[in-house]
Each structure stands twice: as C-alpha cells, then as structure tokens.
Image 1: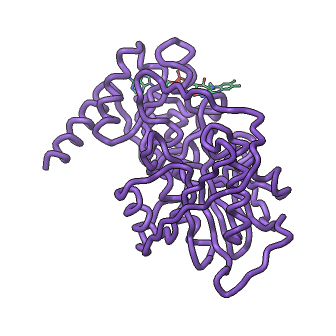
Image 2: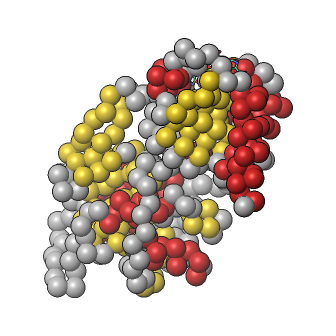
Image 3: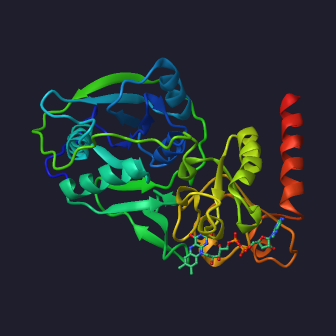
Length: 331
Ligand SMILES: Cc1cc2nc3c(=O)[nH]c(=O)nc-3n(C[C@H](O)[C@H](O)[C@H](O)COP(=O)(O)OP(=O)(O)OC[C@H]3O[C@@H](n4cnc5c(N)ncnc54)[C@H](O)[C@@H]3O)c2cc1C
C-alpha cells in the first residue's frame, strides 16, 4: 500500500499501464488496455515501458488516449532482463506518479511483473480480468475453466489488474502525448533473469493475442491440411488453433491447442472448423466476441454455443470463404 503519498494540484489521481513491446514494436493488444485505463475516470493515462518507442508507436498511443509515455530507466540495476528489478522500478514509478490503478496485460510478461508488484506493494492483484467497472470498483473474471464468472471487489490502492488480451475492445480517443524518462533509484534484487527468449521457428502470431482465430478439429486429418486454415487466417490477419483431439492425433503441436488443457483465448472472431464443441474446448474460447461453427453435423454441440453456424464440409466451406475474402480484399 502507499503510505507516504500526498496529492497536490499537480499530482491528481492517474492511471498507469505497462506496455507490451516485442522487438521494439508496440503490440496491438495494448490499445484495449488504454481503453480500459480511460474508463477509470483518472485525469490522465500514463503508459510505462522499459523500451524506446518510435514515432509511429507514440502516435498510436496518443490516438487511443495516452497522455504521457514514460520510459523507465535505472543506472543501478538491469530492468530489462530481471522481472524483480522491473517490478521494483514500476512500483517506484507508481508511487512517484500517484497512480490510483496500474493495469497490465494477462500475458506471460504481465503476469510475471504484476504478481511481483503486488508482493512489493502488499496489495491484492485482480488477475486475468475480462471486464472492469471502475465506478462500482469491481472486475469480472472467469473461474474453473470458464464454468463460473466471479465479480471481484477492487478495494486497494493502487488497484492492480491484469486484463486478458482482446477482452476489452480498443476505442480511439485522441490525446496529446508527452514523452519523458523516469529514472528509478533501485538496488538490484534480481532473483531470476531472463537470459534468452526463443521464438517458435514459424514466428506465427501468438494465439492468446490474435484478434481472429480459425481452429481445426480432428477431421483436419493430417498436419498438411492446416495450410488450408493458415491461408484463410492470413487473409483475415489471424492465427490458427487446434482442438485437443487434433493435437493428440499428431496433426498440430500443443502450442496450437485451445481449451481447458491448452490456451485460453478471447479473439474478436473465433471460427471453429470441424470442432464438436466439447465443454473442455469451449472452456478455452467461450469469451470470444463472435463464435462461428462450421460442422457437417447439424446436431453438433458447437451449434448450441455459436453466434453463427454453417452446416457443411469444412474442406469446401473454408476454401470458399478464403476465396470470397480475397476477392473482397482486392476490391
Ligand atoms: C480433462 C480433459 C481436458 C481436455 N482438454 C481439452 C482442450 O484443452 N481442448 C480441446 O479441444 N479438447 C479437450 N478435451 C477433449 C474434448 O473432450 C474433446 O474430446 C475434443 O475437444 C474433441 O475434439 P474435436 O471436436 O476436434 O473432435 P471430435 O469430437 O471428433 O469432433 C469432430 C467434429 O467435426 C465434425 N466433422 C467431421 N468431419 C467434418 C468435416 N469434413 N467438416 C466439418 N465438420 C466435420 C463432426 O461432426 C464432429 O462434430 C479434454 C478432455 C478432457 C477429459
């Protein structure tokens, strides 16, 4: 908890977000976070990062409503490879700027840093939330693989939350952005350090961050057939997923599995092709904004759970869909 914070005219409550940057590129999933931060009612949204961002990224942040971009720096410790030091620098910045809420993304990076911040500040963390009502001081998150939804109360200051990627749709609201540097004064307390980040060879979009996912189930039949789904995903700007039955059959790696024992995703559009709609699969994708089922059995359970259903053979429907989308794109 903060114990020594005093507000002045210049130091009114603000909301801070911790940006996700990959290879100096700002990820699109940050913009939903900016939108969430604006809903806090704080007079300013401050975006923190350890990276140096270019003009394009700064313009994008301003377009969604960030008023201050603050680069965290320190001469006394390594904050880029040590999550302990990064969290300590974030906590110092949160105190210094008088942040009422600190928001991050429920990604590997966000989960790592925010859990450490919660420990350092001795406050609770609302992790992996789907909705936030700052007026009521509550947040909604799913429990037990999505079987129940819990509304948690946000009582502490600063309120620490991680938000599931894509759960909150980004809405533009232009602001004037100022950039500055915050020089943290921390002693290195690194207990762990990230030595290397290995990206998968294919360098495809991460499923948990993809705005659109097209998933193939068991009837995909062989690994090569995922190329049909990848072609469609490429036109849509999305990623390809798999059901557990397809993974267990060796058609796709586990990194592509969606569901209770795979990844939890929240894309804007989820296309389930040849997926029966088992509860364990649904557990990982039920918070998708729009679900489309493509199945040749009109009585398949997926049709009870989707927004739109196509009864048909995916080997006919998907290529036809890709072709139509390509034509649409060409004008
Ligand atoms: C503890 C536990 C954890 C689990 N975790 C997961 C998980 O994380 N993720 C997961 O996915 N599953 C999980 N499962 C497995 C889950 O119960 C289902 O068995 C699995 O999801 C079924 O995969 P599927 O829908 O691809 O295959 P199937 O059940 O075989 O369904 C295939 C569907 O495709 C349709 N179909 C067939 N041919 C075509 C075609 N040419 N075109 C269109 N449609 C066609 C069929 O009508 C059928 O509905 C878990 C199970 C357990 C017990």
